[in-house]
Length: 142
Image (cartoon, rainbow, N blue to C red; front, top):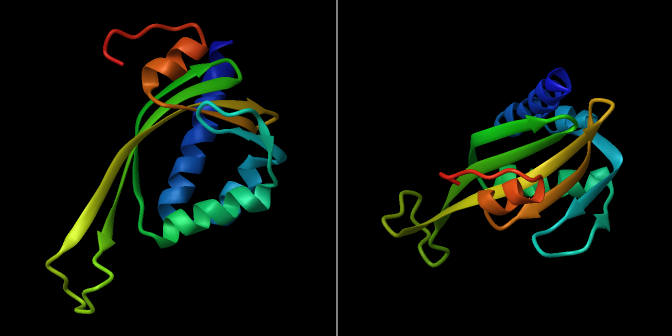
């Protein structure tokens, strides 16, 4: 079980590195064609791999910076916590070096399910403690 958990974490980290590099082709190979995506407090939604890649391509184009804080492998599941940020330019200011910008900063938590070296399901959570609770773990610093 520990080996399977490590393999799931490594799969997730390959996807993370591919996102940082803007390598959507690698990400496509890591996603099951019928990946299931569950938004925070939503029911499961079957989406195509192409739809997921379209959303990720938007995030890459928008200049999102992502950092993995934690990745905890539990067999074929990974609890992941990430931070993300991006700069939002002032659309009313046409100068290339704007002095007025907004910074978007946030956190992301999910339970990622894998099978046969592919991501088959992603369950988003409002925070790390919720994701840990979903898999039966507690964390005093979550």
